[in-house]
Structure formats: structure tokens, C-alpha cells
Image 1: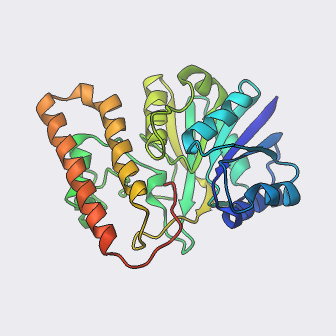
Image 2: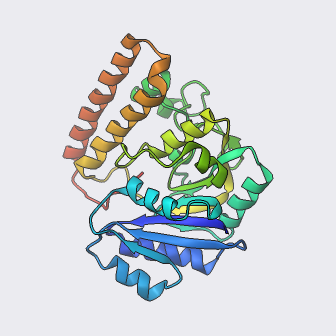
Length: 297
């Protein structure tokens, strides 16, 4: 029985994964733990790197690309009932010293917390805002679409999308945290089940947090557990499928969890608004010139 199982999936991110694993094994948690890596059919030599440099990691290699959600579910299924806590960790993160201990200790002290997210920072030190969020209700989506959250980040009304009005260095109960650094209690996982595989990428963390809260658990943002998140810069060109799946997943989350609360008219407006924003995002991406590695979140 482990205290912590760390689940990492990787696809053609050898150097990023190398940095992620090095940060874990250089500053391992005091509790008993297991690092499980699932390579999602990479072609850049990732499996050989893991075998050579991190033999203590439990490595599995997919024969075909299954996507982030299915791959993590495979790890969670393999270690089902074998850990008190499970940590989803993106391969493009570097965990700061003490972060893993901080997550487990916080969860031990707050037994009503089913899911705990840490503080994610960009390489330049800025906060990676998706690490604390509200659910995308019609009003939250409307304010986001009009960029009112950017104009009035300290407003409790307009800043709800990324909770920009909250102090990033204080602990808060929130609606959702990022799956790039997400701790879930074993009992919570047993109660709400694995991630929903209708999501290919994105949205799975929102859905999991919604299901956790619906089951009576709290979702907490805990800034003493910190990791650097090396994701694509917003001004860089991204693969079009990444943009499509972000909006597609946002609609799945809304339709599955929030739509029953609202009228057909409201839901229709949200649907049209999301796909209008998809078109705008695709056009803006087309006009960009630089290109970078895609990031899951």
C-alpha cells in the first residue's frame, strides 16, 4: 500500500519528461510512493530514456496513441486500491522541492478534501491561471468571451473564470483545479470513478472536480505545493486540433454537468457562443507565425 502513486503520461516530450522525473527523484516525498509512467506511443526515444535514466519508474508503453485520459485511466486501474492518494502530473512540469509532501500532508489534515491542486507557475514566474477555476456557467462564459475577466481581474463578478480576484498565495476552496498537478484521494476515486473517456484532452479535470463536489467532497487550491509548467505560450501557433478539442471539451463539460440547470434557450446561446469563439480562435491561430510544442492544458 503506497501513500502516493504519481501518474505521468508522455507523448513525444522526451526532454520535458526527463526534467519532470529528475525533479521527482531529486526531491522524493517522505511518504511511500510509486512513479508510474505511460508512454503513449512516442517516436522520439522516450521509453529508452526512461529505462536508462529512471529505472525506478514503472514504465508502460502503449502500442498505439490512446490520449491523455485513457492512458491515465490505465495507470489508475493498474494501481486501484493500492494507494491512499493518486497524483496526476503533466510531463511538462518540474516539481519544486517539498511540493509532493505538501499535497499529501494537506490532504491528511483536511479529510473533507477529495481533490487538491497545487500552484502552477510559468517559467517566467507568472501564475498559470488554470490551476484554480470556476465552473463554466453561462455568465462565466459570457464574461470570458467579452474579455471582461481581463479588463476587471479583481472583480468577483467578472474574474470568476480563473478566480483572478483571489490571492494566489493563499489556500482557497474552488470549483476546479488543473489536471497538470492534481491530487485525488483514493476514497474519492473509488466513489466517483475514473476520468470520463469521452474527453480526448482537456475538460477531464473540470469534469472530475464537478463529480467530486457533487459527491460531497471539497476541491482545494493549495499554493504551498508548487510546480513549474512548461506549456506553449499563448502567442505561439498551436495545432488546430488542440484548439478544437479545447472548445469541444468545454461544451461536453457544460452539456454534461451544467446544462440541466438552464433553459434550452440559454443552452442554445452557450452552444452558439462556444462555436463562434472556436471560429475566432482558429482564425487568430492561422494568422500567427511562430510555432511551439503543444501543451495539454
